[in-house]
Image 1 (cartoon, rainbow, N blue to C red):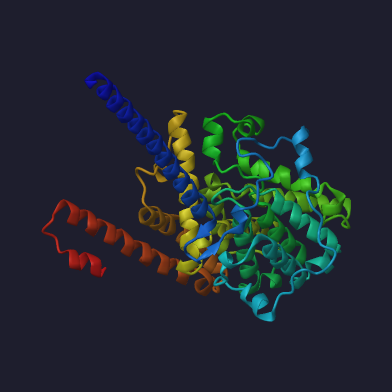
Image 2 (tube, rainbow, N blue to C red):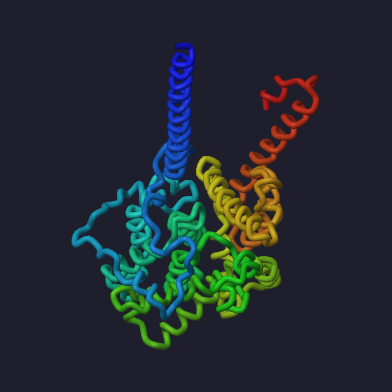
Length: 421
């Protein structure tokens, strides 16, 4: 009797333990599902603007671990995925058109299809469609193909392409570039901005070279990404229905192709000091009739636009810092995993947002825009004022972080003083 009771109790206890174990596993799975949902929500939700970033919802045209290689079956991805609408889908208000010409334009409020309409507006408003005899439908298809060939990276995505292009549009109007540059030059500048990061894989040139990727091997470690962006650009333009330069002569197209290659290759930050020094040497006697001087100016203009996020209001620019650091950290995590060298400014264990931005603004952005300001005084209002505000903003943030660290190491510190800052 006693033994039977013991067995009965033992069986019941065992049954309860099994149920607890199963319930525990379910709870663990539920927690994992919750984390997955949080991660998904965070990946598409922009806390700065309280909106969904639709650019991140669109599936990538190229696979994350694959580099597009010309003359392979992957080229099929560059064929038309979808065609343009047969009607005018978006009508821009006069207020939107005017706001588009200012650095205050909030790029986070626009979804990709709307950004296509805004880019299209730039070509029409600047008179480029008429000047280069671009068929409106060809322009639409070109922009659509470009959008489809930007990957869903945290930073180097189609929204970044739009930001760079919109800042060029700001400079064209704000600095009256149409008074000193031809419409063909303006078209090259705008188109190079639109194409400058096509099919960016989310890992920079240093990674390509150290990891000996297909791109680094193909381009002999010389600006592999920028060369790739150029190649994808002209692969799109090689399609008749997307070739916005189709009505130009062979010689004119050859010149435009050469100019676009020069500009896109200039966005390699490894060449930053070389290009800026070259520009500074020409400033005192800048000659708009000199092709060499004009090429240097155009290189500086696209470089300025490429790294111009801090020239925008803090509420617009700060979200981009988060995106860039996310991309950097993803790369450095992979570099650690693969035993590759890791740059300190990309290491999540060594860099903070304030320290990263203070150095970048002080030693990269301000010298570049101050040099450009000598040729175009309008840069003071367009960019330099915002840059100084951003520098002050991040210096205050850095000071607050240091105060908090001191408080944690010294409990006697005045917490109220820290919180007041």
